[in-house]
Length: 110
Length: 115
Image 1 (cartoon, rainbow over the protein chains, first blue to last red):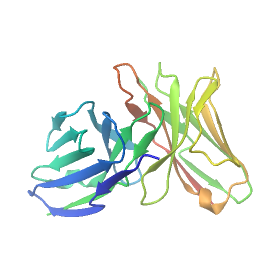
Image 2 (tube, each protein chain N blue to C red):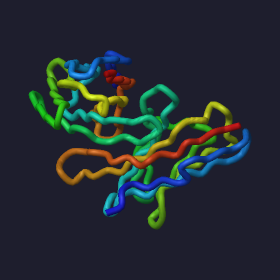
Image 3 (cartoon, rainbow over the protein chains, first blue to last red):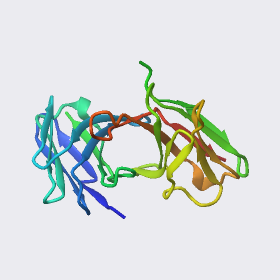
């Protein structure tokens, strides 16, 4: 079974600081997804990364994919309180199943 | 354009009762996934369906759980004789699949509580 690991699991960071969340997966895949989930809510799609070297940016978030290293990163620049949420990465390797990481719970503090 | 809809949003059942969760995919989507999320955990794949066809149910428990997606109407996840361990949030997602990749769009979820 494909395994998807995220770290850190919990992240508390001050407003204005930068940080990176890592997503490692255990088998070959060139499709990786990042989602955001607010407490008690559903998942909101943030990024879809479809090839090695893909980089996408939206506001203070930037995601990248290295398929050779089986690694994706979600970089947060100058964090603000509104970014507090849980972030999940997911990998689609077979076309049928999606495997989700354990999630990174981000809290941005003033 | 309505998104993925799920109902009920909250469901309370006593042990031994049946739970029926419904999911209506986005307009034009004919693929549905069901996931279970326990508190403080990620999503676990349960089943992948197309209209009138189960594509992959390898993530679904062999007993008490079943899923269908009829030609007409919503997809239904059915849990018979619920136990406390079934308490979780159940999300469905429908598949776009129109641009060479399989981006999923998630519904709001059904939060099942078993007393």
